[in-house]
Image 1 (cartoon, rainbow, N blue to C red):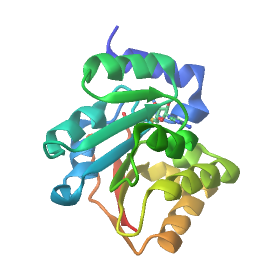
Image 2 (image 1 turned 180 degrees about the vertical axis):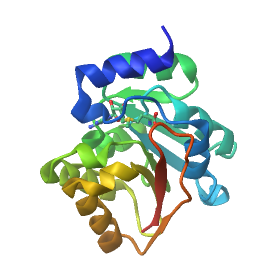
Image 3 (image 1 turned 60 degrees about the vertical axis):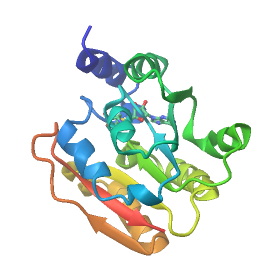
Length: 192
Ligand SMILES: C[S@@+](CC[C@H](N)C(=O)[O-])C[C@H]1O[C@@H](n2cnc3c(N)ncnc32)[C@H](O)[C@@H]1O
């Protein structure tokens, strides 16, 4: 079965947590990653790897010797990413455990987070829980990329998340739109 089919099935099983009907496009992966200062990144973490579109791309940007692990809660999607990117340390877990995973791996700080979580589908309590978990490991100067669908901006949760980013990051820039993505999306490029 293709990655798209597995992804759509995961959406049918758990639409609120998967938050998309199809994996992201290579065009969106480029917008997520091309702006980051990869020379300064020694450790990067991915939230919500899905079928591994961003995971695969991060490997191309990461400098030799850089550390990278990804977290994905859905077991079927986690297995797909594992077989697509066997060199990547993939944790089938919830992003709320990121600090524990870092501690267990002996990682003291994370320089960048590449995030595929569907923020506009989450309640305010869940948004807060995952943002707090992220700030436990991302220090001042840390880079954060996450994408949003244009229609998600019309939802109160999408608006709330956008406001939160502006309040908690020193820089928040918006990328051009990835029109070939299903649906079209843009990236929030943030620095703490
Ligand atoms: C919108 S999809 C994006 C997947 C992939 N990054 C992409 O762009 O194609 C969101 C992904 O986040 C995962 N996810 C949702 N909540 C999560 C959580 N609490 N911890 C880890 N992964 C989570 C979902 O299972 C899903 O694979």
